[in-house]
Length: 350
View: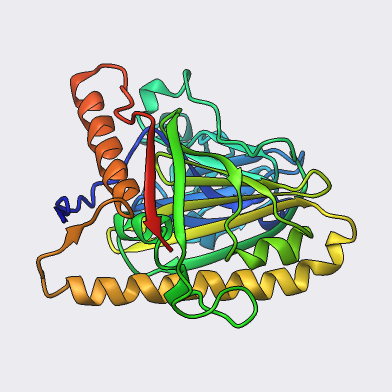
């Protein structure tokens, strides 16, 4: 047995985070999101372009998302200060000529934002580095074939949400079902892993015999590959040759003890559109079971018990903390990130 690392609730800055999907942002409308403890207003102007501003007015801190957006400017509901989508203040109704400040003196904070494959990503990091941003994460091969988006609030830290979701041994206990896996149905597993950009990869392999959900959905035993990358992005790619599925699961911290989990699904399955209702029901149940499971852990860990990580089932959790620590240290030292993960074969029962 191996002692578990001390949990760190520090947010990782310098990354793209999932804030919404494209269909959430309507023309000439805005929404509020809290990302890493920061209030963000996300909107789409009348030309269709997406933008992101700080959702607090620089004057008295009122939420701008509670005000009026006409497709060009956001108006604060308290004093009518108006801001263009690039953050520039355009009107301060209370100010007379010559009084300070004037609109040209005021600018709201903006956030880099991108739409890719149906996902709206917001970059949270150092504003001074906004000109050299990393590429947003992508899903392989499928592109803009987004089929479903599920969003669930996990009432726990970002660390607990991520490590709870990546745990490979809980399926037969948390997700047991007479349809796809019986309670306590655990079998020997052996998987090869290799480093990947900002994380690691479970190398391509034939799906396990007790993964019946795959067979029911894709019509056969697929080959699958799973990639994990900081700050909390898991991409699963499964294909039978005739049908392909990709699932992108992204954990976005809201506060120190609240995490939004986005599960975004893509597939190329003949007649797959007719399956959306059923898949939404099943996937929603899975995500809800995971939310309940990490809540049980959170409630238990509130008593500050001694915990542990075991070999080999918990190795990926150990890797996550190593990656996070290396990223934080590299940022502190002002040096490039160095991936500490090396190729390894892991064996466990699940």
